[in-house]
Length: 355
Image: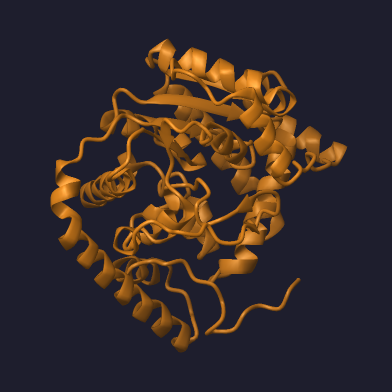
């Protein structure tokens, strides 16, 4: 295990003051006083920037009408990022960038980045990310102080309540209203001065299809699925890597982590199934990670056809992007005894998707 960073050097998310206050009150963590002061001070600065950005751009944002987005959903480590990157090659679709998602309170103030910067490998270890890479809007909601399952990156105990932190239908009325307003405002900022339909990707959206449909009744959804056994092993690795970098509270041990990942996935699938029952057929499709990696262009072409998205990125552009990207890692090996346990615990998921 690597040495933990110090008070002044450890990475913190760019969370505003209200967000840090809510997190500290909720999780009652015993932190170094200097770290708490650092978080609250930087949070105050982000809140000030947020107020300035709102004051300067309110009229333009109020006048802007959003097109209903295309959502990419699926469990963590199922290939959502790869699918997002490939569909984002379409110049007719508009995705939030890493810079925007981690600086939602100030990206309009700083203007368009002239340099994407050096790409770095993300903590999960498999994809290169730059400031202009397509990114999850969930990070923007976290930084804006909204309830978010990504609170669990900072306070791991939040994983035990991940479903309730994800679906706005389970929030208080005030929190739900704040979440909706923050999401709409952020997406309008991303769209300001640009043409194109939003392309949004976050595994968290798999929990909240009904809430998203209420906000965006004309949205389209593509779900990506993958063999559940390696997904669960890889998801556990993801959480441990993120905790190594960001956790301020005690971590879950691997036994509790595995059980929590399984329970949350089963709950996610049941919620998705219930909320998708009356979805129009032309607005929802499901693909497998295995077919996306085996035949990327044909799979993207099928998505575009089934969702009626128009002309998809060319085969040449898809191939060139994949050739220039880090090589995809093979699925992690799963111990046969563990796989038997997972097949029993997640039988409905294995059966539903034919694994």
